[in-house]
Structures are given as C-alpha cells and as structure tokens.
Image (cartoon, rainbow, N blue to C red; front, side, top):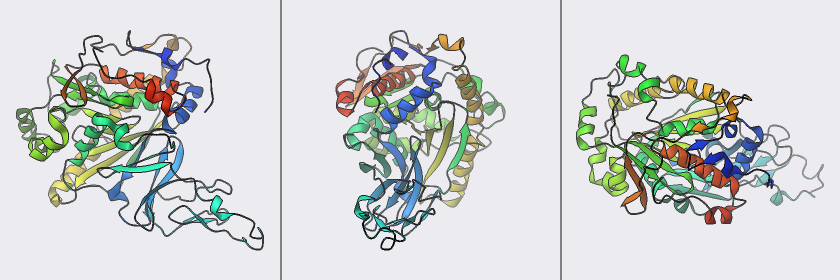
Length: 439
C-alpha cells in the first residue's frame, strides 16, 4: 500500500456538518487507493454455498477489480483463487460458473488443481529441465475463506479478523434476513449490467427512502407497486462497526398483512415470514421490525424482502457493474417460485422498473462530481443530523428510532474515511467510528 501523508481522507467527510467532498466519487487516485485500502483487506462476498455445492463447482466473482474463482476442492472445502496464471497472468477460468476437474491456462497450458496447486507444465522436463519448483507457483489463494449461514466471503489480508467478528451483530442480522426464508438457494442466472456511476453512490442509495416517491413515481402509477403516502413514517436505523448498516421503514404485523393482500400487477413478496418464532430467534426485535435494506460493507446489499442480494462492483471511478442474485426456498411450490422470480426480474436489474430510474440519477450525480466548478461544493447528507439518538434495544445492536433520514449514508462515508486512513488492520481496529451517543 502506498503511503501518502499528503491526503487526509477524513477531511473529505465532515460528520459534524453532514457533508461529503465530491472528489471521492470521480478521482482516479482515490479510486485506486480504495482497491488497496478497502477491497484488498475487507471480507468480500463471493457466492452462496448453493452455487458451489460439489467438488469442482466454481463461481467467478471479483475482489475490487481482481477476478477471483470461488470453488470447492476435492474434499469439499471452500477455496478462492486469483483468476490469474502465475506464468503470464492470463485468466485460467473464462466461464461465469460451472464444474471442472482443474483450471487450465489457455496461453501456455499451465494447469492447476482444485487446491490451486500447479500440477501441469508443458515442457517441464525438456524446456525447464525440471528446475521449475511447481509447488511455489500455484494460484494465489485468498488469505481466508469463511461462510456465514451459507454466504461465502473471502479476504486477501491475513490480518483480517474472523468473518463473524467482522460482520458484528448488524452484519449478521442483515445476512440472517436472507437466510430466514427456509432452505434457501440462489436461482440460476445472475442479472448483470453496467451503470455509469461511482460504486459508493450506488451503495448509499440503498439507504435512501427520500427518493422513492419522486424517482419511482411511475411504479405505483402503473400498478406495479401500491400507492404509498409521502408521510413521516417510522424508520429504524441500525449502525454497525466497520460501516455495516441497515436503514428503512418500520414494519408491523398489521402492515405485513395489508401488503400481503395488496392488489398489484405482480404479487408482492409476502413478508409474514417475520411473524414466525424462527425469524424472531434469528433477527431479534429490531431485525423483525426493520423493513430496511442492509449493506455489508463495502458493497453487498440485501434487499428488504430478504430474497435478493446485490453487489456494486467498481469498474473504475465512473463505472459500476451491478449484480443481482435471487434467493428462494428450494421447497417453494412451483407457481409461487415463478411468481417470485418474475417479481424480482421486474423490480431491480437491467429490466427492473426501479433500478432504471436509479441508474439515471446515479450517472448524473457522478458526472456532477467531475467538473471544476461543481466539485468545489460538497454533497449534503445532513438530514436529521444531530437528532439520531442511538439506543440498544437489542443486545449489541445500536439503533435509532426516527423517520426518513440520512444517518446510514453518512455512517457509510465515515467508515469509508476510517478504512482509507488506516494503514493496516491493527490501526483500523484501534481507530474507527463507533455507533454511540447522538449522530
């Protein structure tokens, strides 16, 4: 990691004023440092275990801008490798997913087994005279690979704390919302599209309930969503260490029953699963009552219904690739399964009625961070600033009972500044924002 004492990353985020410097959304040097200081050392979501159930199954993903292979070895263990041959760096895996016995580089034929060992080198005897120490030239492996409730994560930094510690109560609650729907598995096919925006703007939007009635006005007009009043409804915000957060409307059994009976073009997700003893045990009172969107820092969104996951993958400071995963109970009746998949396909993703609206906003917002004049003026994240009293209504969960707000967005940028400032994991552990007091 480059040491650059001239850059004071915390100066870009003013938590007292509730402002964020526009330069962090389009500056190439800052983006490059994000790849080093955030993605190269955090826990990154790789896949769900249902996507790689057998030895040799693989799923291609990214850590920052590095292509990686998530797979199972011959003993069924989880492995994550850089998708780069150690000879000339060519990709050893080109398919998005599948099943293999080994990984072959199509450039010169170097071959790696499911443990990442270099097992085949053409001309090893005649060209290399058996001098090449193959045990030293295996695929680069993730420092740690762990799974929480079936969600597989990897980190390239050996100093990263264990996954459950990193997630903390708020991160674990967010993943539990997706795991609480029974014996869940990922539906075949991940929706992918590229939007001309910075990845952080796409992340902070998931906490934004201020834009819904404006940006998505066409959804209720078309009958796709029920018409909701623009009112001061109750919200819950949960803030976690290292930038994890959940924010959105409070839900009650009465609200869930009303939504389940709402007449819409495509049936809404029935959220009465929250009323089960299993949900209460997994989520606790804050989790059950929150219909907000969780984000596992830095870039994993869990939709409020708990049946979709989304990655915001950086493709440079001005471009983000959006991946949507749909998760359903494998025992769901076929008619409900078809209806659920139709709902997901038409809500988010490239054909989604909502994200088409969002993408336009994000791209325009990103463009407005590049110009010489506009970037002199910070963005405003001050809604309800200084009025968010943090309480602990559930052990270990710091939450705020409030209305529509921007606490989770500002919290994400505060965490971003902590990650960008810390030179290593020991420094980050010692010096990062904690959710206490009033924000």
